[in-house]
Length: 263
Ligand code: IPD
Ligand code: CA
Ligand code: CA
Image 1 (cartoon, rainbow, N blue to C red):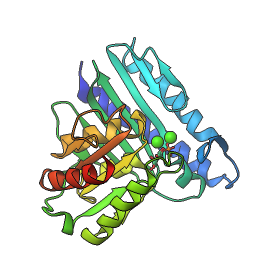
Image 2: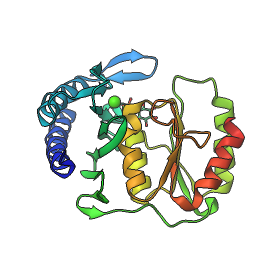
Image 3: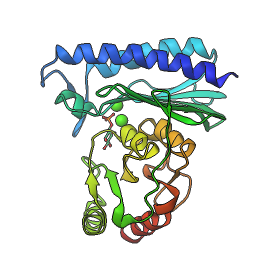
Image 4: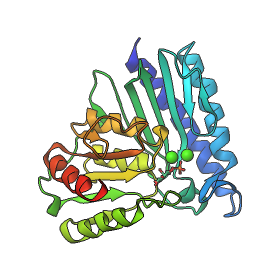
């Protein structure tokens, strides 16, 4: 399989999808959305973008499977499976805020081989393929070189439906408010991870995420020299609904804090 070629074609598709998403946004009112469940929203743009991507990606790799946020699983046991979030940051999108990203990962036998996070607000595509470096709009990217939590800027997401661990999470955030440069809640986990990959953020942690939120971004972080894990330091971050990501230098300290508060 020629991953470089498939990556290029995937980037072509996210270019096209981002034009559609922006043009729909300009015609939009804040009330043009449906509620899937408490605080979980979807628009016709999420749905149509995913349909467009699936139709085109199916042609790139015949006989592949899909895990998509809006369309669910289709042949997810195939050798090649695309994991897609057509619009990561729907709440931002509805409120005309950035970031908003298209997130696409290609898995081969459950291991990521391509990742694309295309943030449409700044029109920045972050991407990598197996055996290649990580890039943002053709420029090579790396995780940051910040070596202490005290000097780190951290990204996170606020729980908005799964409040079971909220008190522990608030305590963890309180700790970081005292012991880091600060916390950011950008509203798109895929973008958070892409920003760790390019060094804008030094670390990221969040729970209750789905595979389509993190598959592409986590791969790009690793390709850019960073580390990704679940809240126990294991590798169950794709389906395990907990993730931390950072550069190598603050990884142990970040994981220690997360373990201390979230155990
Ligand atoms: C959401 C975003 C957000 C995160 C949520 C996700 P969506 O994705 O990534 O940053 O905090 O947990 O569900 O619903 O906008 O695709
Ligand atoms: Ca998402
Ligand atoms: Ca989404």
